[in-house]
Length: 276
Image (cartoon, rainbow, N blue to C red):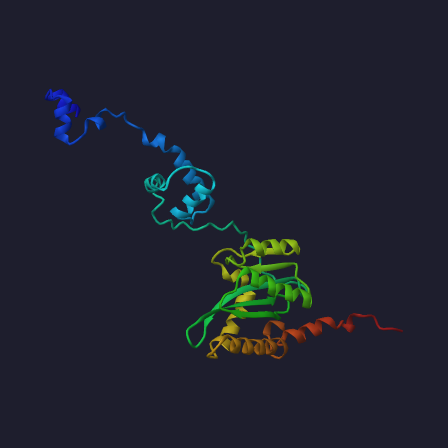
């Protein structure tokens, strides 16, 4: 428009007709979109900061519930200009974990190791396995199987073990979502249980239960074809009793875990002075 009106001395009416612009649009004052949409930008940033996985409609419903008057067309325009409609693949960073030496505890019920495994039935349906062992005598405390094992299910298993034998002073665990959940952390804090997280992608820092999982997979999961979960539970429970009561363990002087425990309970009379 400036070129036509200044260089060619055309009147505004003919210049507007030449470029297909109405006179009303030409005389309308220009609006700074960035300044006008600043409140919408601030609200959308607040919605996304609350949960990075929220999409447009969830964010829009939240801001309308919070009392903001912006309509969905304006919010969608600003949402696209901000690039929030593009896929966000940023993963949540885990808090830093200090490397800790792996040493066998000096007494039972001092440190328990927890881990999750996965396998499938003969039909192809996947299921998960929770394994818990005592790091002192390598005793298997629980093998829980189901199609889904949440943090709530994990807490129920631990409460059952608490009623049977008490709780340890610490858990050695990895960084899985069930073990990083708020519910599990609050439950451990309420029972004064320390959480010893291993570093990400360092399974050797939880070597006791990793070694047990290898044995369990070799002797049970890879040995049988399970038709259903009940069959897998029965076989696993029977194998767990065999492991604790009969299977020799080289790290325990070729004794089963429970027999090793019985030997620890018997005092060494050779160290006592002879009576005169």
